[in-house]
Length: 299
Image (cartoon, rainbow, N blue to C red):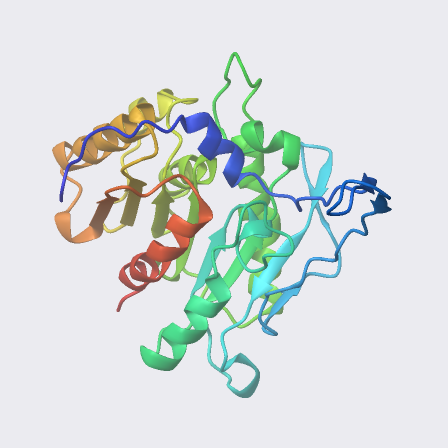
């Protein structure tokens, strides 16, 4: 692993880039090239880039204890419709940003395109369940601990929603491999933080975690939890960080990797990578998703 100097990009910019939602196009008077005779700009409808195998569940799901409901998106592998196989499942946060540029905040992960290619070239087939983020509730929903700046942590209730509402629904309606050894969870930024919480809090549910650009800074208690509720020794942990994500982010990542190693998490079940120059954005996560998911779900 190559260690690099701290990046200068502020982490706050990256946190904002990870938030979901469609960027709007402004309307109103716009001058022509000569500066006269203004015309009215017409907003353009974003073009969907999601594969045909991606769909939105028809009903938003109620989130017990939070008084909200949530959109859930689903990717099915290419062979699903013509087979009777059961498939591993990867649960991912920030569903708006996973499959479709039309719903993403700052570009998409390309999860569907990457997995279609891996199915064709490597034989790796997964179901992916994307849970949309809660917009202005994202910073609390994806944090299991209270934070003076952002408010009371709602991560425990959010994860209960995934474990007790979303997963049973998916396991009932689709051909899944429901065991922990075939079930992963993954996210970036605050989604990386809650993914680490999830694999430590629910070791009976998740056997794999993709922890991308984790935002440990709003929840320093995660280090204590990792010491007291260590990940199961057979749990696969894939940690990634961009070298230009900012000193606080990089320092937290380095600290966590070192802690996991010192605690004795088996080297064969720990994948970590720091990419020089990479920033806190979907383009970086997209570039590393394929390698991480292949490692997480390899036989």
